[in-house]
Length: 341
Image (cartoon, rainbow, N blue to C red):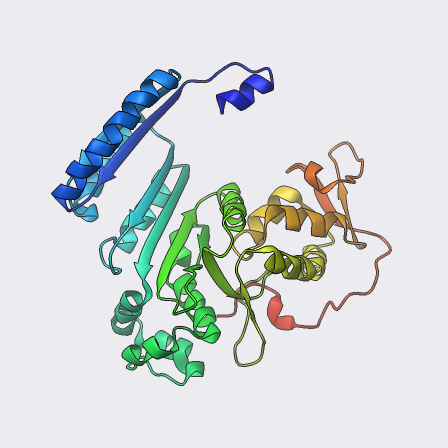
């Protein structure tokens, strides 16, 4: 960061960072200390502007969380990232996720779990909703064990994403429901919670920089979860080049449709906040689909028109042009208005 600031002619900033490691296994923590200590010593020598404090805890996460929260409070940290890599599904309570997201202005959580554990929980907690979600696969909520044979099917991935999103969507403004990619069976999920669109925008871009590590099945433009396996033909989106081509093609129709539904004009900030929970697309593809669209224009605060995708700013406004070409406004109605309930 300071290297970039130096290039821009700006002064260096002091960075204070608290790094908390926690594991229920004491041997794991002791081994971790031997690896972290030399890196911490090197960082103190090579990065004098970085003030790094490292704490180690040896508890199950729910037991450790009050201490972690206390440490964060003492340091008045406003930007936090939690990496919660758990076995199964039950080691991190939903209320704890909510508390993290509500306690800090800039909070992100990376959260891993086994899908079968989540399904077992939902089977007890929300049996009727789970039954409806599994119905098109020919299963009832009592057939969880039979799912193992279906987990390599793309229809299963699309269904599981909806189940995951439905289970966690109220935990944060932005929730990515993407699976860890494994064509042999989509059983493990790594989802990202954020309370700012910019965090989700960056996360989407990172997924594309590491193509094929996560997977999505459904639409690749806006309203990614509106795919209905009973009526639509979805596609596997692996955040790779071919996926980006498909996403851009869909965005060319989806974005003007959204702008038209919002009264023919929309501030870019509002646009970002409305789309980044419903799209897997890369920011560059979103911007290109706006600039290259014959029906849209981007107007600057001074009244000028943007000509290049990489110059779009949050203070700009996206508008429908006065003279527009015909595009299928009312086709694929299922793609409008977000995921179906």
